[in-house]
Image (cartoon, rainbow, N blue to C red; front, side):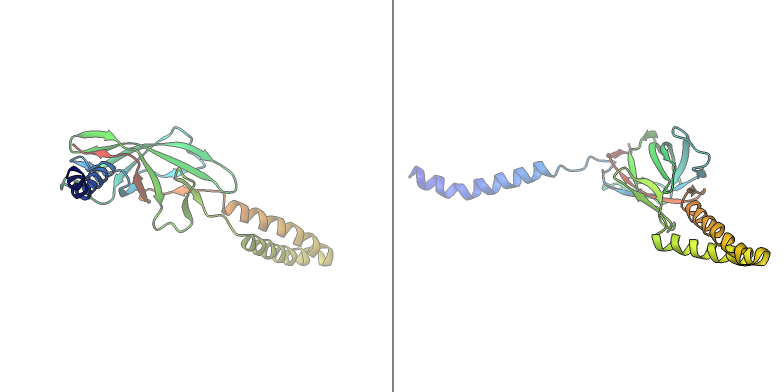
Length: 209
């Protein structure tokens, strides 16, 4: 009799256990919170130029569009954001790592921990790596080769005008070098103008109240 009762109760017990474990694995979001993983659009209110900024420099931004919590609390557009530059990596493919510190809410400043995931509207820029560094898309080998060929042709034409065949050969060499240098320089600088939009992902829950 006892075995029959246990067999009859087992499916219900297993179903209850499954529901309980699922609830444990998927905790509900606390009230007045933007959960980790939320994507937010912001705009820079400072100009960031890798020629002049250094690690540790502060920058400011603003919320570009409103976001709301699951229970309806709204963080309105225009709220101010504070951050700092964590790293500037010079070279052929310059990198700029931005870190966020605080965001303004209706009840004061709260910590903001987030990662850049996109640079909408800036086709030459993209986040690189797991930390969200912003980098310029480098020139392809074909683009660099084209710059060298164009530079060589322009240099040869100028050299021929001043020194015949010998001048053309010399000018072609100098022009190729100048073309390669120009290609290098085109991938070297990274400037984020005031008003640049950045897409960021929250890496921690953001408590609004």
